[in-house]
Length: 229
Ligand code: SAH
Image (cartoon, rainbow, N blue to C red):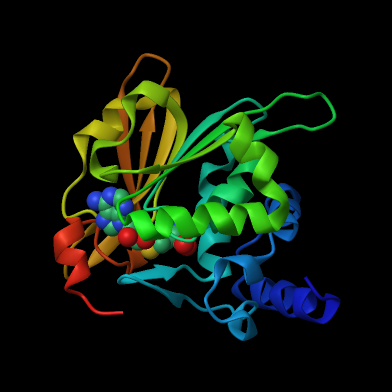
């Protein structure tokens, strides 16, 4: 990222006051958003952008915010699931948060996305951004499938991020949370709110509503394909 653009991103983040942790900032700086958007001129704008197939890459401040909530569960060696992985951007950021290159401890990030064209594109994006080795070793896995079902065989997950709004809480994802584990998920249709779902060491599940949002729906592939660009 150019220094001027980086400053712009830093300023935007400061304006929203959302990045409070150095770890999140450091991980986000290692991922160049220019590789994950359709129009590189807009790469460093702090706004969501369309990535085709009815999908949108979230604004950087929104990604930062989500990661911040999950941060206590993002440690070297953690397993993370990103549902509706779209561009792959967040999988790149999460990878750096669960991997400690100095000690060689690597975590696993699984991205699941139901539009196969986006899965293929996101893999290319990650490779262009220097994450080919992480894909080849399986430290990052990009899977084509219905994220509402999660991916039980790669779980349980210490952190689950959901990047599309579920009409109701998907029980399969709650089941795939580790003990302890945390999920950040937008829930709702006309009005949506982020719900933080926590599972404790004994498997007790609690939910907390964080703030209102507007995400694309977590839906059927066929339905999404009728939703325009
Ligand atoms: N964090 C991603 C967000 C992409 S938008 C990014 O910033 O790039 C939300 C994504 O959820 C879209 O790519 C959409 O195709 C995907 N999606 C919607 N319903 C889904 C489902 N049932 N299973 C998997 N992915 C889904």
